[in-house]
Image 1 (cartoon, rainbow, N blue to C red):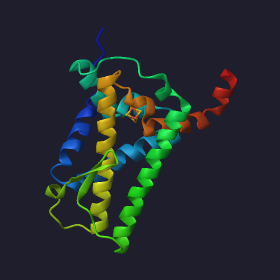
Image 2 (spheres, rainbow, N blue to C red):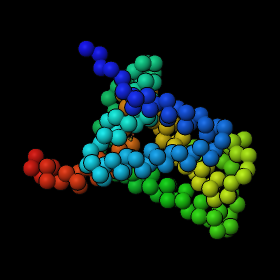
Image 3 (cartoon, rainbow, N blue to C red):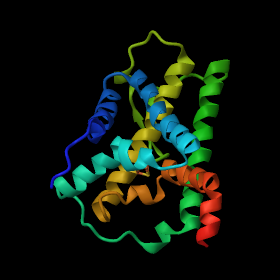
Length: 197
Ligand code: SF4
């Protein structure tokens, strides 16, 4: 029997909308913080990965692109990407770059540097993005929006590349949020893990 769809099965639309709105007004990037805090709150409070299993619009989007639109080669992801050192190494790298983005925001807040209207893709390529900002906000808020959108766009691009090369949700294997929430769930359920070892 076909499972009836729930409201959360459509959260991929929110993910798509988020990425699209970043082309029109960069300040919408602030909404991305929801994808940062909600998974952490769920894992800390409930000790489970309900966010990944149900509410992650980005994961759903990769499923749709890979399975329904058949854009995925559906190959196994290389073993080294599944390894602990790669997943935690990538999480560390991601967090360092995230802190770097927060430092840039702080520098603008202090007036030490000027706001840069660019979106940095894959931590390297700086794409001019002034078309998505028309003024009216405090510069540090705008700097944060550009930085956060860069993080979201970069992770989506990586997710799409791995979706095409491997299985649709291969990004989930090394997604920093997934690694963090998994770590939190492990700590919260340490007794269960010990019993099973
Ligand atoms: S691992 Fe990341 S992309 Fe995958 S479902 Fe969880 S939060 Fe979403």
